[in-house]
Length: 240
Image (cartoon, rainbow, N blue to C red; front, side, top):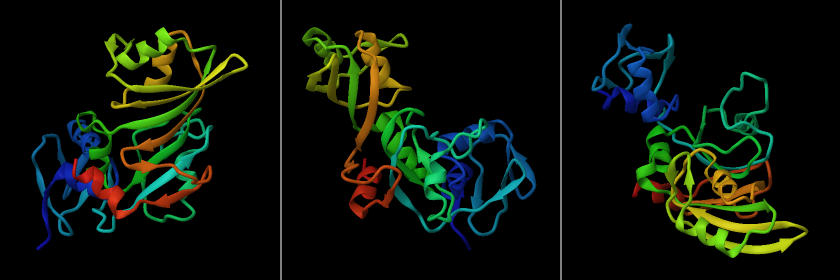
């Protein structure tokens, strides 16, 4: 007898989607179990016994979990497939990793740096869900000179998309040739948050690089390369 789990957890274990995304798929009627379409939450399935399909394609719970850190270059889309034919982050790992892994959260097309990828939807939810507040550290090159009053606004929180951001840590590293290099650490993960924060104080971001998520640091990982996470890095998020 296999393990009995909720349907959304099974989908997350398969690597097909995060648990939250799986719940949305169920609500949309895209998931079936043993040929029967499921449209309500709470259904349980037996791993290795029941047949689960998404959009008519079978998915299987993965027993071997993979967790990697990728140094994403600018010019790559943080999705598995792109309708416009642009290069995706999966292109950077598919030659070496033959199990489907998906990105945890997003980095903008033009943003580079640390991106986590996995086939473990449960773990991905721990990393990305707002309530766990995984810290994220960036280096940003800003247009113009960031003034001290503007710096203090960033630290206290600024209003973007009608809502004030949480307090952040921000330091000016260098000012040169009309540009300001800053290091900023945020504790939430709203859409294009860092870019919008600096736009709000009149210093648009010219370049942006993420260098840390939680206890995982980019370090000297070369652009376009990836590495497996350590057991300590993996368990850090599971224990949050």
